Length: 211
Image (cartoon, rainbow, N blue to C red; front, side, top):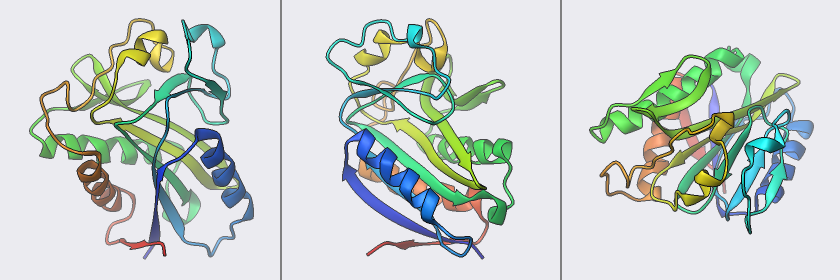
């Protein structure tokens, strides 16, 4: 049975948490437990490893950070739940496609429990409500270990998404739970999402909170 350790990091600078993920992944051994890091970031645009700078239309006063994850450009900011998945994917028996599907399924289940219909799109990782994207995914696999993860929009300022082509798609609309009529908190969504990740990533797994 897999053993997940959950770390609640609060609001942290994106570059700081990226460096910590990289360091953890470089140093971990096959016996180390998998970890889920729950965090939020101050406003920042992040550009994937092969991301095209032209997808940033007008960054303005929001910093742009080049990341080593897959995917194009996205926005992180207050009111968004970010979960980084530091997993031994070989031990969990997950290929990249299965990992992506598991993360998407966890978000879809959370949204379904709130009375909304969400879905995935072939060839466009993430979760959508109608034509609007509500959760983004970006991952990196190194030596059989994953890091980065998913971001889920709860109740945030959506205007910065209009300054980019979200995930490299021109004209893609972005939404959050508040815009879809759901009144909830990031703390509630964090706990619901962790429960669903437990179910999707490893049947029968229990989380242990880090001290």
